[in-house]
Length: 298
Image (cartoon, rainbow, N blue to C red; front, side, top):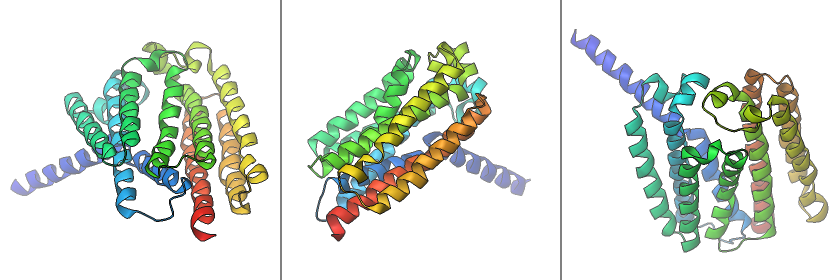
């Protein structure tokens, strides 16, 4: 009997840990931390300050985790329809637990950010406030919610740039590309979540104007992004490495994702948005490689 209870406790603990990893969205938080490091390198610091890089990564990670948790907290009813496997609807994490952990993580991220620079602290405060406003209210405002998510994701690059005390054209371009890529992805996510969004009056483009309008809008955003993606190579002198990574790892992935989503089916939109995470990672890495070449190798 005792061995059965021990096994059950171990099983519960494992499910609990996996639930927290899921609700925090560890992969997304790692991507945010990585983006801040890229922003720092693009800023042109000549010396790798390892302590600075560590603080940047951890601060972005915990603020991102806080934002993801509070989003699940406010979305529990919607997720019960769209994504019943999420930790709160499944009962693996209590709503009040999620809310408390979100506050703690956000507080840690803001305090840590102010130890980097004053501007990093301000950016962290803005990101934290936007996450709460978005989750609580603004996601129900047509397009505003999508814009906030895209802006918050792109903000991580600027955040890293402030730590280097040097915001350059490279930082601005990387931020713009990250914004457009995430904005287009958010429009497709509206197709993925359309049924639950309609029921709970979440005014995404797909829920208000229809799935086809949301798809065409995302298509336009991605076309603009793909056209802009060659600017650093043609006009700023970025290397062939950047061009190859962008064309093959970003633009090609976008084309495949849009082709899949063209069925206008929520399940295919889900596949597309997951695929676009690859484009986000490769796009950030293209700027990372270029930053290393421009400021540290040459």
